[in-house]
Image 1 (tube, helix red, strand yellow):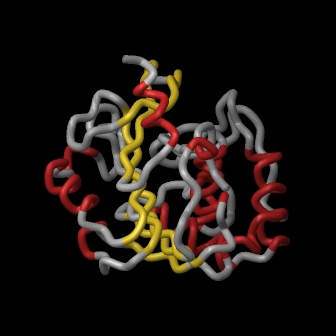
Image 2 (image 1 turned 180 degrees about the vertical axis):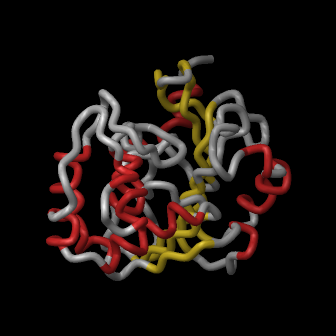
Length: 228
């Protein structure tokens, strides 16, 4: 629904579809995978309180609540608007796309004035979701499709709750121990699981290759075998 650093908006269609009726995202961010399969039972978890506050505000918001938020233009200061703090945070991500924290000053790449109409139309998708703030390690080990998209080992240092706070070896063991279908996102620089390359991506901070690890067969295993 909103722009966020590391969003899977450009590659979400490459990931395996969920094999379980429930999707769990322990590092929710902008939850592009859950939005693609929104009709499933969804649990979003994130340690960054701003992300959870935005999702919870959207979950209870009416279409008119979103549509009535003001249009903004380059140079405008969102912090001066008399609106709910959660709405400011939502706008703060959309006025400067791909940010790790909400911004105040509208930049060149502001998509808010069109984003708010798309967001309002999609509110019905998240009404039944469960959205909580917390740490991945505290989650019950349910049988579900686990879509695990943590701050990356190399490149995730920019996040407010960053890669420097993660023990990747522990995270790898935790991922492998989940019940059900496990899909883990990373780039090919990572070494904490045997990742398969997916697609090269160019962003504001350079070019990397998105990668996947899963406990179930996926298309990129066959692609990698063709390289040798």
